[in-house]
Image 1: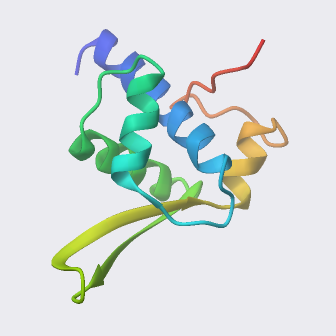
Image 2 (image 1 turned 90 degrees about the horizontal axis):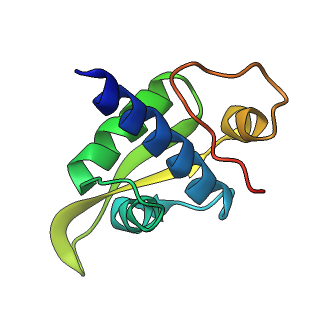
Length: 106
């Protein structure tokens, strides 16, 4: 991975946390998260979003799970939700994580 890709990943992770924090406690579909991050100017695909969510999950900032409803589709849908440690990171209640660039509103 080159330096530019690393920066894009770090920024994407920050925007993913921001997106999930708009709906604390709710499961948000990957396609919604991907659209949010794209609208913030980060080039990302659904598979990229899932990869970044897995990274955030490994750091215990989010929970990721797959849901299925055979009444609607046989496909599984990946969803995520922010957990308290992720909220603490966004609110600067815990030390910064060097793998995540948190976007700040001005």
